[in-house]
Image (cartoon, rainbow over all chains, first blue to last red):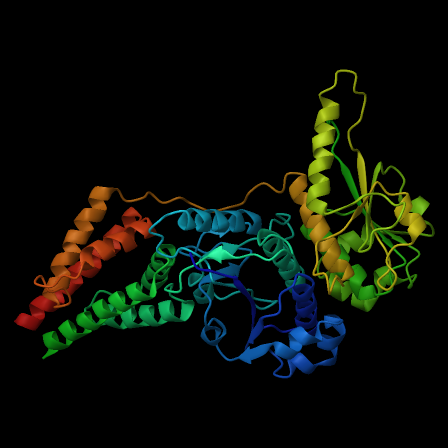
Length: 260
Length: 260
């Protein structure tokens, strides 16, 4: 059995307030996390702004290592399990669960997989937590590609958690799920597809499904989010990505022959 | 038997930063708490300061009801169980526990007390959470009078939790210990496809994959068993079977057009 530590990444999408970025760095560091990626923040120089640094209060190393990228895709390299954070469940989206409930399930299924002789690699190797903008939360299409939407239990009439406060709670729960500050490893297989590979395969399928006339771009009927969810649940291996891309390629070739 | 609801109060002692007071009000409100008392804050007008109001972000009712008092004693009226929050355990102080551990013990002993016939009120009626100043934490003499010192697990080299972040974590744990909020989930559990439906869909796919030239019947390379495993892991719904059959149908039609 191969064991490697789980990588944890926090991804902030379109964050507006510099103070929140600083507070996030601090919230991560107290829970022992350091991998922070900002997708298209409002301020390009957000990592060096005065308010950021004030609120980071000693977590300057986290800010120093943080990356700024243009697209969510660039932020997700190497991540295999994507957790959206969303107050409102989306139709056709992933299941909505509380952090505690979801993390317990995650380790339960990893344990089950590890106990099977012919384990195909159900393990988790990279977990990303995604946070939308302060005003608008996450875009539907970003939620759709996630494996779960984490919803922190809040008062039904006032669910307005501050970004850094929400991240603090999730980082805390995740740290406890990992066993506190003791060293933790889980069984994992190197063959599991990461989020970028899944997204690439889905784009290939989208093209193919349009070519064979199954997907009508004028009336897509949430087909791609549905397929995304289906494949997320399957936890695809790299080899399966290869097979599914082969199917897409053959669909495109058949459609091409049909035209000619 | 606990017959009256537990009252919960948050007490901030000698708080310096107005922004923290606002963030605290918001953190309390999202967890459904509203009883806030400030003991000798740095700014006498802290409840009305611009930064306080900005960071409270909609929790103005909590600020409106908050009380400012001169001494800790005045803040604790009606409270029966006092929880200090402290990073560093004090000699001669109360036991240091993590919030989760302590709350579990608290309800366990309340249950035990309630099961005794002659119990006249061993239950908890008022719980106060005390937070010291940002720079110095709590004074020893204030910690000494508490029943417990709550310590949130943090990284050994960087335990510097922001005041509002610490309060958010404790309010969250306490709310869950009290039983959380009624669940407002839309987690509809769609009906799972049965084995016959999956097999029928796979037969349809097999035919389609041969038609578009992806599956070579002379060298099938375990393709169908692999797809079967993939779709089993996904635990397909009846609706997804319908979608996947639609894809197969479109593949067959494309292949037919290619021939003609």
